[in-house]
Image (cartoon, rainbow, N blue to C red):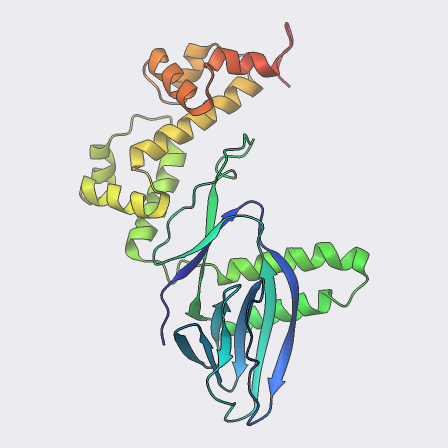
Length: 294
């Protein structure tokens, strides 16, 4: 069957690799029948066919296809291998929130944590539960490197294994080749807003630039980022102002103008809504009297 669901993970912290290998089944061999595994089980097909089920869903996996089985569910074989079958598998787990959803929607953290990097406090990666790889050999090469790293000295293997695993996740993430037109447009809007946030931007000017209706722009951004274009712009501007408060001694009215706010009072109001403090009081938290920013 074709599974369109996504496994969405709130990061950081990122999912981490546990174990993996390459397995060969001879003709007539069955995949194990298992319950209540406490980690994600990823199957990447290389040769032959594998017939697997999870709860009420079933798949016939062929070379170049990937399936992610979820923790604490019943994973079972449907029929034995009809010929020699080769596949990679690895297990991973996450310490933070995750869910299954039909669309790429951002997950909200249970607690906002102050951070020095925009969006690192609330980012979501989306892994298709099932996918057909466009270039499977690239992933096979990464997986070989991943497995080779696990047999090195532990002092070396830990960092190398997790770093390669991040590349594996990135290659499995819902990518540009598979993205819907709405998500692609939302990402183009995101780039435009980041590059032009200092300039006056309105829904009308965005619609003119991207040659689509304002309502469609809002719908695309809502789907990808759970906010409208102007909401995203306001959040990004406020984050840039926070960095300027920490790294410069510019007066507040200069910072307000620099990030695209026409009125200092509105900038202060938006900043306090985001961080719970006025811009001046936020700056005082990190500055000693008569000390210049580094």
